[in-house]
Image (cartoon, rainbow, N blue to C red):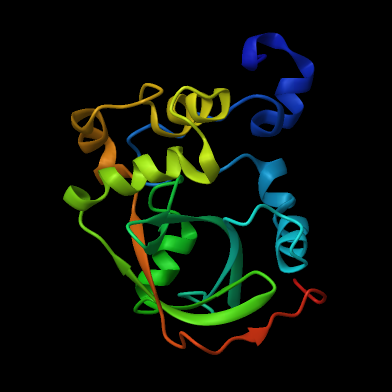
Length: 192
């Protein structure tokens, strides 16, 4: 059976070429396999400072093995604070952060120890809106419209009620840096 309307490139590359529907109400919505396989490259680019300024690498111990797990995320600025939003819902990184009591390392060119605090669903809508409008994206821009529809299942410039309706499916964490004035260089090479 052919998916993605029978288009062979879309079938092969899923969410890289065609958008992925992250809006289902299930607990965990994994990204497409090609995206997951490209994570190490994205981490290397982020560590070298070659990705957008809002991209960060999250490092957290795995809840089963204790091995450090890394993933690329979008850091959202809202009301002078930093936040992380899980597009995949109850994703692996969310479960690992909860198991680690929020203790993580966030990095770009420098690594900083941080504590992530999950915020309740009632406080998430303004952060999700900030996610959609990050990096100067206007509510009517093509990028913001596409993300609103495919990642959140909302309109281009969603009303507060629309965001409240989806907030429970998207865990959001506030970032509190543990060492505000000190950071250490992050290794660009040797990422697993």
